[in-house]
Figure (cartoon, rainbow, N blue to C red):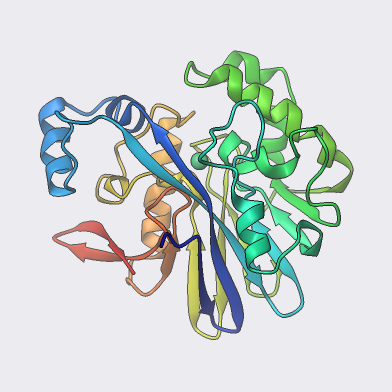
Length: 288
Ligand SMILES: [Zn+2]
């Protein structure tokens, strides 16, 4: 049976990784490793049991995270939702939450890591109604400003450009009066800190959770594929500022370098959890 939820604890916080489904991207090499030579990519892909000559598809999990701190129920990212842009295999977050006994109105806060359709598409329903009716939303201010300004038309590159802009236009205005825009690293509740992880987008954030000597980092799309852990210098075609994205990846690897910090990847194989393993100055992904 396919597992859609995975529960675990970080110190005194109860956490739940919840699947929003799986999306089939048709162009793994061009999307995730646009500037890597064919030989080099073939070599590393073989190590990961990916046969590029046979299949250039990338089946990506979408995984959101629920954290119950005891005082607050927090959701990180909302999945793709059910609009015209999304696929029938994604947008399953609400069904999977319901199976675990959660209603959208139960959440005190919804943290949006960045404004891409797979992360904010679930903010509204197909008929444009706000899904999380009782939540405060948290976003980085630069991210909000970028997607609500004219800059987005000029600065966004080709990949999914139209879909990205459309999704932001559908999902940001409905939360305008309940969004808390953060512009500096801060602990929003004791043990849960938000920090800047820009590059993939102008104001992507990562979330670090630290309680009772347990630590977790939700790195969002700072790393999209486990190969990026090994090669943080390989940027994706959807990293808006590749140089900055590389800096962010190195910063997160640095923070988790002891190998004791649990890492959570939205696009990584379910449940998206793993640790860093270091070998000869390179990091590798060790899934739990
Ligand atoms: Zn994403």
